[in-house]
Image (cartoon, rainbow, N blue to C red; front, side, top):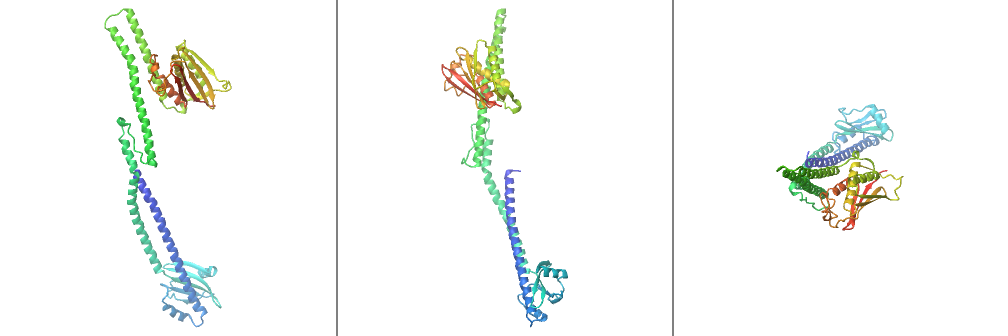
Length: 456
């Protein structure tokens, strides 16, 4: 069901319940008031008749009947019966015996003094009356024609008001819901108009204060992330294609040249060596791209395990030295870290090993003496690793861009590389809830700082 209809029906239901409760309250209050007023009139009439018959010696039953016949204030279909202490009727206007009065009922009146009940179509009041010389039970019955008529008219009026009110509520509810949902409909229309070709478009945020504006702001933030992701993906594909195309073009060119005519064995050997070097370079780029894709994936707790960060750091050092034995890597642990403090965390060992290897390799590669200085300390529940070199450094303008995929600083153009390493490191560290930052100065070197959380 549409929210528009659901809100409308809920609105009508709530108002209907309020109207029904109010109508019932009015009806019940009026009904109880009518009943109390009518029984009070019955009581007054019963008391007056009993007083005239019992306390005034000059009036007997026959005379009282004649008086009551001509009494203009008599109630509709009025019946009055008076019983003495032996339950004998000493006075009765119920000549047709329409009221059924049992001895048990008479005794109940003597016990409770006042009893009210209905014998359709009569409402009956039984009342105990103590005269000068004896005690009597008086029953007065009548039909409240006027009161019941008013109650019926009230019932009809309340029903008509209820139906008309529901009609008005339905019409006003549709207008209200339509106006309330118009901003959402506008947002939906604006969102549908945004596609791949206009991801830079944004949704109107209105007054910027209400919930609709907050929804629009949330959509705009999401669009910013999507636009950023599309740009990164687009640049990534373009750069990756370029990086992969270059060695493939070189390989193709060498093979085409070597096949144009017969060559000496030495020329074939040189071409094969060149092609092999480009294939190794291509394989290296492919592995880096796969690692970047893996680092970009979201991890759950199930993908992580308990790891020793210090052990991974030593393994990363061995990995770098295995490929470049002329590098110098010095690792220094702070005095605050002793054997009892285990640098244990949760993460993916292979990815962290790749990240640390890349940072160490960069520090050695861009340092004049191919030396990397690594310091390890702990602060609170974090391990802090600083990777320093005395190399070419990075300009302040380029520091903000070095973690972008395939970006290479101008000072590094003379050094072999693809611009994937730092982007890969940043993704891996971020996926482990860590942080990476860099401080650098041209011709003086750089210091990369990695902070990773520890787990006891």
